[in-house]
Length: 451
Image (tube, rainbow, N blue to C red; front, side, top):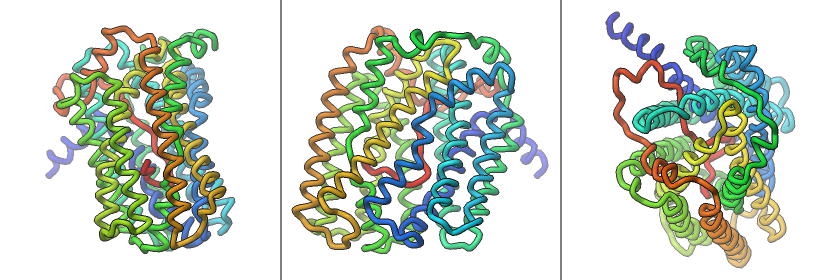
């Protein structure tokens, strides 16, 4: 037994960055189901309030460029592994403060702070990724990206299971806070290449952000994710009308992370010869059909058992959504300039998160104007109007993304490489120790965004 345990320990030490992404996924998803039930059942929030609160908590992920700039400067004086450990520690402390007072605003503030510190840890890990992936071979990129996705998704699955199991436990938030200790202690074993830190150099704001390719790609990312969706409406109906249990929510989230892995594998094996913009837009168009199916389900035009419909919806929608984002995530790494990797990659991901926040706030505002609030029986005319506006804005977004892609000055060689740098699920032994990279989409603490 001891040799097996020792092999496990040695493997974790050799792949500490992957372990860190396991803990990131674990800590992000651990409070998810608990938070959903608390907002709806304890604080009695409606559709509009859920959308607004979700956007408020997610603001932390929209200010990642500021965090990235701080990381790039601090990394000259403070070890990245200490910064990561400190971030996990503060996130856990924020969660533990929830039990101090049963107040909605304290609850939101603690979730925001926890989200902020986890976003900080994510930025630092992304900084290590971009700085090391810049000069890596295509094979190395594939190996790194594949294994990080696996690590983070496995962590997220464990987090979903924990969240469902302790959804109504009296000490549920204390348990979630304790989970962060895994990230705190694992970070101290992180191996950081000294050259990664020494390469940091100063670039002006003009050099970093006023570049034509950066501006155009930023606009592209915004229109990729800005359109309002129905996640708040669907979530409210699931919890209040259909009385979906924590186990079903956990199953849906686990299925979602499994679909992320499947989409990554399919991108490498089936879609690598596709034009990247086709991979980004075709799945988005197909997702409209899934979006419409939720309208038909909520208005009872189709009658399917709620658990079957929910799991099926999450399965297909997550697969298509993740597949469409992959080429954009890789383009983002290719546009990052040496010396400001954390700032630039955080900026691109934050722009996507900012667009997601705009999406949630637009969803809440649109639902409020139309009159969709806390009704358990939705009016067909109102819900059809809501979905119609969302679909129109979605089509506009897809069209803008398609047009702007051909305006971003990326060389043909780089665009071809984007097709080939995604997920190869085999790791070579010689690459285990020096791997320090990841391409990942960001999460928020509140729910699965179904659109």
